[in-house]
Length: 278
Image (cartoon, rainbow, N blue to C red):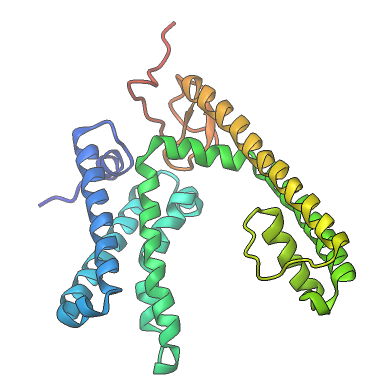
């Protein structure tokens, strides 16, 4: 049996408009969901004691399957480095890497590390994002607003540091505020409106500061929401006029573009993204 050409493999694996491409995507989604189900079952001690060897064999079967998929994607990608460095390329690595790392973790003293690596297999579910177009729009919106969000979190860090330090001075160790880091923890819990109640100010002045902190928390919640909503609206509008590359996932291409202007990969045309005539 002749091995399919790179162009055929690219159309099936990276494309979604052909029947073969849709069947491949559907089969991969089913495999991802089944592998997550195996992970869930493996975390139940009673089930693991009953069918542990079967779960172990299934887990390695899925690992080899996803490893083969990743290798074929690299083989047929038009820009291999762009794919390997992309969000989806990294998620594909995370889907298979933990199982191989477990092999190189020796000794019973590292059982906790082994358990952690096994739980990391849950990242496979992130591979599903590739098949949800709305998720791609959301990811691009978060990417476009990352600088504004970083500035917001920087300002928020300054605020909780100030409020925490102030409560440390006002309340002191006798009221539970034994250190500045612990007081900052209180400020974070308060300003995010979680309010565990494990540490509470006792003096009137401290309670007044807490009230201001809580009110400020409600106002602050709206800031990142507005930033992401604005970028999300921009990306949704852009979705009607531009497309994004299936390999590097960067947007900003004209509707009739045949190749990505960032990585040089071939663009796809869907029913919503037909080339403009004339």
